[in-house]
Length: 189
Image (cartoon, rainbow, N blue to C red; front, side, top):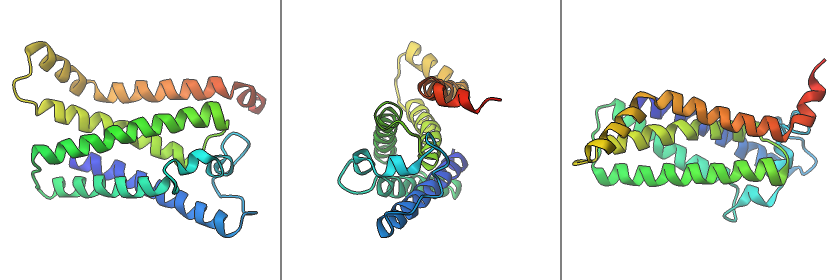
């Protein structure tokens, strides 16, 4: 659990920092094309200049930098043998739940309002999903006195957590493929 939290949060933190660096570079030089702008669909430029890129009045990567730092620290602490109380895990659950809702709002905005995908954002999305699944399943397994049907459902979710994450990825990839099919088809010989 600790290693998974640390590795996933590490990748998320790197992506959030890279996105913040690109965002600052564009603020300094508005004519700059970010390194993550690859084509009309994979375009940080389109995403980071949209109103959705500052959903709370400041650049979204700030949220990622703070959140992933907390998760990374938690993962490293667990690896070092730390044991956290229920209230801490409840707080982490609140954080990853906020993150998964926010990421899916951003995914919807990117796909259907902005019409472009930010590669660094895709990394953040990709790590937020397994973080949410891992923390949620972990927390549900710690709930005392779950009725037997609920306990079995939690055990199944734990056993198939990788399949849940892969299925989630496939759903998002299918939505992106469908949304931008007219562009993707032009890339085929």
